[in-house]
Image (cartoon, rainbow, N blue to C red; front, side, top):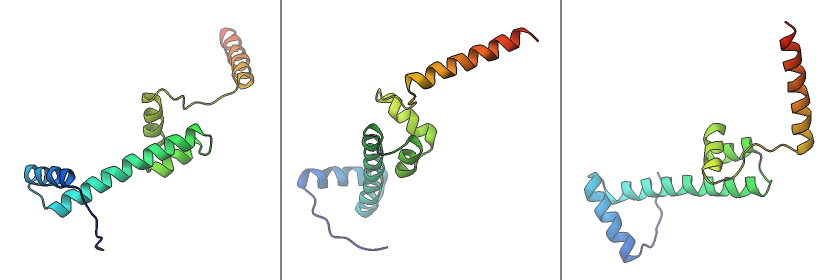
Length: 108
């Protein structure tokens, strides 16, 4: 494991020490956990932004965020962002196809 020097403000240092005591962990372990959680959160936010800007597909956003496609879709939905992109023409074509299936289902 590599070492890194980081400057921490007094408020953050106090919070880190409180969390360390509660978790019965070292300050280093708490910092590693906080950084890991922060990076996960940051990756999700970046994936969301890239998805909204149509730079990432749903699959690529999930891959970047290191989560499943279902988790990424839920994350987007929870933030009011549609994860299912389909044009009006594609939707109309799907409706016609479904109507054909229904018509054939009634003849059986």
